[in-house]
Every structure is written in structure tokens, then in C-alpha cells.
Image (cartoon, rainbow, N blue to C red; front, side, top):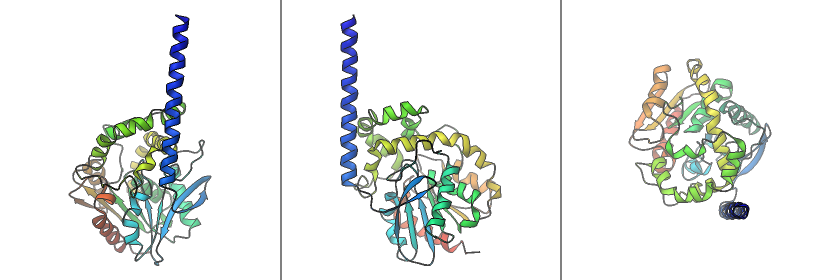
Length: 318
């Protein structure tokens, strides 16, 4: 029996070592194929990666969603908007090529403070803050804490309220609360599971629209195969429970112009629970519903770009 236990232990160690090596090699290939294409600045101890284009007098700051990256916007929207405006797309703390210290909070409130610090550091002069999905929650937190730094909000399929049924099944693997377990999973099982479940997850995230064929490269999707990215997304998701319900109670304090774009067939967030609920709490909010799913910046970039342009025009500088 003793020899059997020793053999079993050795087998487990070998499997774990093999998974670790596979993860390291995969992450390395991703980084070589998709190197950071922007610049870096340090805000509140976070090394923030951002992509900046355009030189217009009016500014836009684009904030991606859960497990997203700045390439979700640079795929098409950033370049189009940069023809007329100064546009900055960031990797949120820990996401993409941005780095967040282990001891730093993942709360959207803290991320809002990082956004405010970035606005000051880059001298963005009251940008229109554009947020997709979880990035919408970060934008709302920024508007609540730092309204004087913003021109308004343009929110695309935003998370505004805690979903009654919990996170979508596409993000179930992220709901790990123990730090040690989160890291163990990220460096062993995460990559092979993500590769195996890729089609199933993307069908939920993008559906009913098709996933762009070049999403892994041009859209930055492959960056999700890096362990650090998974750890950050998991921390973001778990941290929502404590802060978002408190934010919901303060939405009536918002005075900035807010416009929301939602796909009627969104499979990640419910347009009624997230979009219409904001209108009911704050009648000044403008909600626009279109045919489409959750990943509108990638599946309908022209329409989404037009929405951002109209949102900027509807938010005159004070």
C-alpha cells in the first residue's frame, strides 16, 4: 500500500509538472505572437498598459470588460474614433499587459481611482468615459467618485447591477475565492480547459452573433490564455459582490450625461436588468437597444463607434 501511495503521489506531481510546463510554453507563445503594442505608466502601484491614438481636442477613454483587453477596442473602434479625437484604450489593472500587485484591491472602486489617476497623468482633460461590460461598472464607479474629471459616460452592454442568478456560465471557472487555489488552477488546469471549452464559451459570450475569425489575434482573445490574466479576472469577479450593491444605492447621485447601448439578445447580461434598470433609477439615462449580443465592439464596431460619437455630442463640456 505504501508503494502504491508513493507511486500515485509521483504520478500527480508529474501530471502537475506537465500541466505547468504546458501553461508556461503556451503563455510564452502568446506573448511572442501578441506583444504589448502601447505604452506604460504607473498609477497607484499598478503598471498600466495603454494604447493611444489621435490628436483631437476632445478625448475618449475606453475601458474593457471582464477578461477583456484593450485590443477589444483597437480591433476597429479605436482607429475609427482616432480620426477625430484623442483616444486612449487601457488594459485594466491585471488584465492584458497591465500589472496589479498581489496586495492591491480588485474592487471597481479602486479601479475607478486608477482611472482618475490615469486621466491626470495623461492630461486627458475631461474625457468621455467609454466602458464595456464590467468596464461599465468601473466607469460608473469613476463617475460616482470623480465626476469632476469626466465629461460623461457611454456604456456598452454595461454591468450596472448584480445579476440575480450570479455570473454567466461562461465565467463560472473564474469564481474561485481562495488565492492559492486560483493561482494553482491558473498555472495547471486553466489553459487546457480553456482550449477544450473555447467554442462553448465563445458561443455564449458572442452569441447569437458569430465570433470574428481574427478575434484571437486582432481582438486580443489569445491573451486570455496567460495565467496572470485569469488570476486578475477571477479577482475582479469575486470583488464585485462587496462593492456593486453599494454602488447601486448611489446611482441617483449621478449628474453626468449617461448613454447605454445594449444588444437585445445579450447572453451574458440582461438588457432589462442592467440597462432598463438604470433608466428606472435615473430617468436622464438614455438606453438604446439594437439587434445583437454582448461583444458589440467586436461584432458591430461601426454601429458602436457611431454610438460613442453621438454620446460625445450629447455630452457638452461644462
